[in-house]
Length: 286
Image: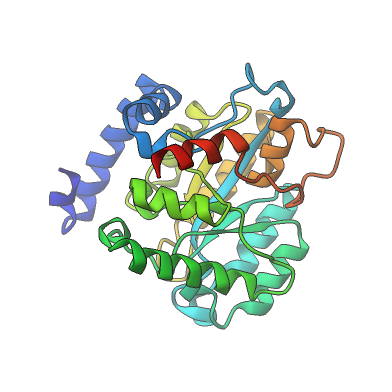
């Protein structure tokens, strides 16, 4: 287990590099397909929008940024720097924020929304044991995180959820559906939280990315995962060279289901709610 290297960042980084080099060789989309088929709780999780099924996503990917906005509050925030990089590249993103990490950054959050970005629910804080909680405790924390987002002017209720560390149980899936949200992970990722090598991270992600991909990275802060700011810069440059445009998850979903076209502005508009077929699946499970 890679966890055994948690006290040795260098060894952990080496192990994670080996893991993601192998996963990229196998194919992250192949792995995502296997997960969705083998584990019922993930069967309607969104990992990507393949071009052969959704030709309108050609040339676009969804950029998602986890664990924002800043666990250290305004003192450690790099929101302005992230915003500037995104603006330079005409990119919009879905920030999977932790509800407790919005405190003191409400004005910055509102400005991100004005720029066309959107917020998704990533629970209240960066911890990996939410999947172990009793159903009622999980739902209470889930709703509180959504409420924190909805309190930001212009945000509304979040449309998307990402389970911390990607750990989603059947009970959690039921909660997501009851609140008319969708669970999204991705197919373009390289554990930037544990690999402090921006060049390797971006090289790996650029090997994985395709039109319709969902890219995952983590929010930088001063003194914590600060290297991911360089990851963002290099990734945006690499995607631009590839002719790939970064949009929000909602915008990519709207392209995929035909409710938007590439010629339209692609910000955080165009809700993509739970489909009737997915609701029927949930009713069958109940």
